[in-house]
Each structure stands twice: as structure tokens, then as C-alpha cells.
Amino acid sequence: MSRLNAERVSLSFQRRGHSQVILDSFDLQIEKGTSVVVLGPSGCGKSSLLNVLAGFQPAHSGRVHIDGKTLEGPGGERGVVFQDDALMPWLDALDNVALGLRLRGLNKAQRHARALEVLELVGLASHAHHQVSELSGGQRQRLGLARALAVDPDFLLLDEPFGALDALTRERMQVLLLDVWKRTGKGLFLITHSVDEALFLATDLIVLDGPPARAVLRRRLPFARRYLGGEPVRSIKGDPAFAKLRQELLDVFLQEPADHAF
Ligand SMILES: Nc1ncnc2c1ncn2[C@@H]1O[C@H](COP(=O)(O)OP(=O)(O)O)[C@@H](O)[C@H]1O
Ligand SMILES: [Mg+2]
Image (tube, rainbow, N blue to C red; front, side):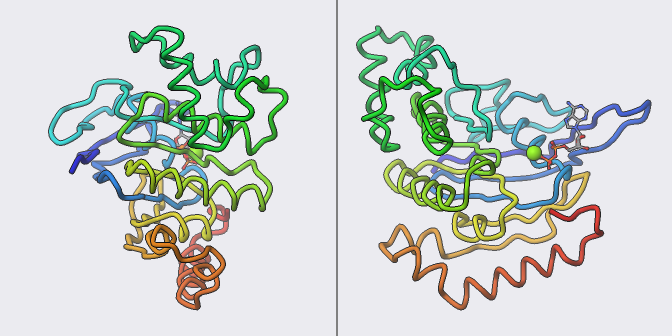
């Protein structure tokens, strides 16, 4: 079973003449087929951690590896989805996805066939020839997801992917992500500000505080797997165990200083 590891990674930024430690010998594992969700206040180092895992930001010490193979810089084993995806407005949905496949040695017909396959996976095949400007916020996020899936990475790294969506679209996207996860068996690493989203999507929940980022709580959760097993969303979210954990997590945050409020 493949595993993406951050091993004793450290990272500091210079700020107004002094150095701010963001990651201090931080460890994390994401096993393929699991869904690691990170919940934490603004500025605690979540995006920095994701950028290190993605290879966009080199750690100052420590290493990122998959099963012992050190990763230098970004690579096709990891697909990344951001909140505001940098989609190309002059290309249609199909070409936005196909673009990332250019370096893969596929010809145009092969790129389009693969792009259509992943658009299908995220339920956007009927919009393949729509311009980005013709897509809703939720559809754009699905396009961003399709683009990240195109090269078939083992791991998907998502930085607050649904943060800008309205509540209903957000719920639909959570379900869509779990469906994609079920069908592809990828390892997920997802950052969110939402306690409910974290509870629903995580098999492994990590609550961070910081900087420097530190785990104040790690918890295995059953809800995402229950959805995969066929239990309806309403039944999962209506489970008293879900409500109890939500309250526990909110209590963790209410203990934080006010400037850490969400
Ligand atoms: N490129 C950078 N240069 C300097 N400081 C940065 C940079 N990126 C992030 N930071 C600082 O690192 C801290 C953590 O940022 P970030 O990882 O984006 O937090 P989060 O995603 O949890 O909100 C913040 O104080 C932020 O200002
Ligand atoms: Mg962030």
C-alpha cells in the first residue's frame, strides 16, 4: 500500500527581519485509500504543509517521500486542487483538463479521450465544450478536480477546495469527492475550515494549531467509510455520534484564543 510521507519537515519564513517557524519537525502520513483531513485556524500553517507535500515549497529540512522514494518538486503522483483554481478562461472545459496531459507524451486525440473520461468521473462530461466563464462555481471546482485527476495521481491534495461555494453546492461537492474517492481509491489530503466537512470527509482527522503547526488532536473517524458502504448522507450527519463529535471539536476551538477564531 502506497504512502505519502512528510518526515520531520521544517519550514521558516522571514518576516519583518525575524524568522517565523511554520513547520517544526512535522510528521504526517497519508496512506492510499485513506482520507486525511486537516482542520485548523487561519495562519497555523495548513497551506504551507500542503505546499511542502505537493513539492511547490521545498522544506528547509526533513523530506517528503512515497514509500522511501524522496520527492523533489511537484510530480504526477500528487494532484492538487485549490479553492480558486487557476483555470484557463480562453479554453473550454475539455482543453483545461487536456492541457495538463501535454507533457505526458499523449497525442491530441488521446489527451481528449482521457480528459473526457475524468470529466465523466466528476459529472461534467456534458459541459466539455463550455467555456470556463459559462460554468458555475461548483462546476469550476469539479473542473479543477478533473484536471487534478487527469494524470491519475495516487494522492489528491486539496486546499479548502469548497470554501467559496454556497452551502448546498458544498454538500454536493463533498459527496462527489467521496464518490470519486470510492471509485479511484486515491489517498486524500484535504484542508478545511468547516468542522462538519472535516467530520464527514475524514477517515483520519488532524486538528492543527500553530504556527508552528502542531497536531492538537488526531482521530480516526467512521463517517466517510459509512458513506462508501452505502449509508445515506442524511443518516450519517443525523447520527448523534456525529453531533457529539461536532460539539467536541467546537469545544477544542472555543478554547483557542480569540484571534484564532474561524
Ligand atoms: N511565502 C511566504 N512568505 C512569508 N510568510 C509566509 C509565506 N507563506 C505563508 N507565510 C506565513 O506562514 C504562516 C502560515 O501560513 P499558511 O500556511 O498559509 O496558513 P493557513 O493555510 O493555515 O492559513 C502565516 O503566518 C503566513 O503569513
Ligand atoms: Mg491556507
